[in-house]
Length: 107
Image (cartoon, rainbow, N blue to C red; front, side, top):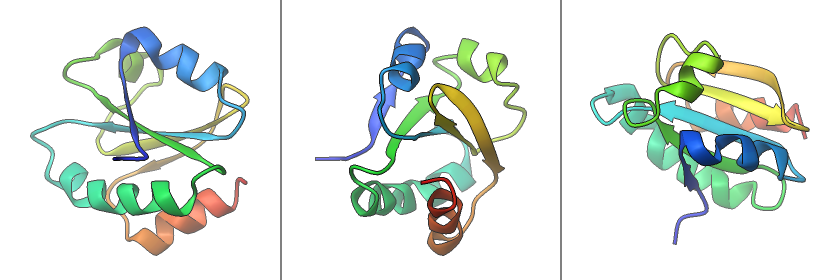
């Protein structure tokens, strides 16, 4: 079972507003090579940061409203939300250690 949740435009706001821990949203698409590269990394980090950070994925092709609202211009884009507010963004594919350090600095 994956620790990562799949979200949609319909439940995006509820996901970030109802969480008591920071939420990292991965904006991705099926055709995106770098998105596929970081997918297993995010799976590992979801387990490593369980209870500290919730990791969620949203497919930008199936859910165009959320990427537009948060001005996502390239993918993969990871936006970290805390208290329902975007607090930091990382665009591109990065090694596990760099994404982990990105999360650590905000928890």
